[in-house]
Image (cartoon, rainbow, N blue to C red; front, side):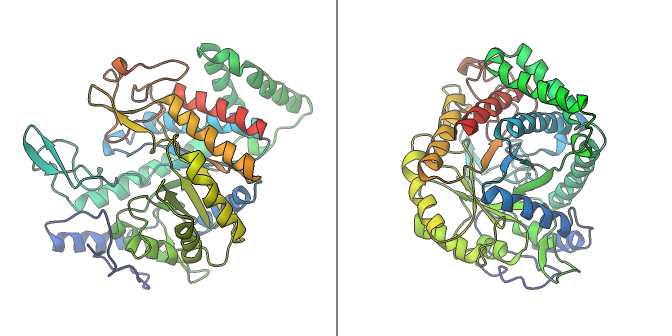
Length: 449
């Protein structure tokens, strides 16, 4: 289908192009009314913040920083609480502290947060017990309950997404600037994790090194402001183009278009058609951009994304988020990195070790093996080490809660445990313990580069 809304900023060259994975709203007039209302709402983020993130991602692309991007597979309206958001943020801050020390480079922290309410699906319908209904496409589109009424796409949910995102951003900003993100506190959390983790002994040396460094700084009388607050950015997949278009505004400073729904937006594996609306939309906005690259991506396609989305070859403008699968990353990634690097483009290369490693357990639960996730990260690092290029970061689906959705990890979860706390509405996430295991293991890999 094509995109229905017109952006108030004009220049909507994507409007009449085919757009994959868009809901079929039964009431087009209701949709138009919602889009008009959304277009009158204040921006969720500001153009200057997007520019600052683009400069930070420029450092990632040039090998001077590392990107940590993580959060829910799909956010839920009923999870917009201080506890949920704090736990997610706490986990990302803990991972960031470990990676910053081990890599000795700045870590750019970006959440899959405050907008990740929509999900592309492999099939438009779902069948259970002989009943076929539209697939659940995220809380921004329809309901999770398997009923005909819940699964009808409802444009009013776009307004709920906006308000939920605004509430989330308010909390994130309060937490990251109000003392909660103080580095000494974050390190104390990591010490507690090392003590209680079954893999803790493996991480003890690194935790002790960080402790010694902090004691040294304190003894020198150093108490920099950077220890007390943290830069944290919001990102999501720019999937629902009606919503993204309504929040696309002209920056008064530059006259350029910015998607003010989030600082960083990406185009997914299922919507990256070169002749489609999503790539055209991305080409018109000034935000830093990501494109997910799966195992079918050719070097020619990767070069075309550079040409379309980063014609000026500006470091920080374009990040390739690679999701190959543990069994394919060592074979498929080298040519892409070689050809793009040879073109002169300076893009960020990030590994998404989650989406290529999903399988269905005998119980029917979608899950991932922690060892497969780790192996894809290892393969990603091996490729970059061999080519002399920079492994720029990791993009993971995680939660700060003690869920049982992925098997393995130091505090091992078995297939038979999946039912205990399987809470995701879509794809399985790493829990807090598995996320921190991953951070310490990635830190070891980075040190070996």
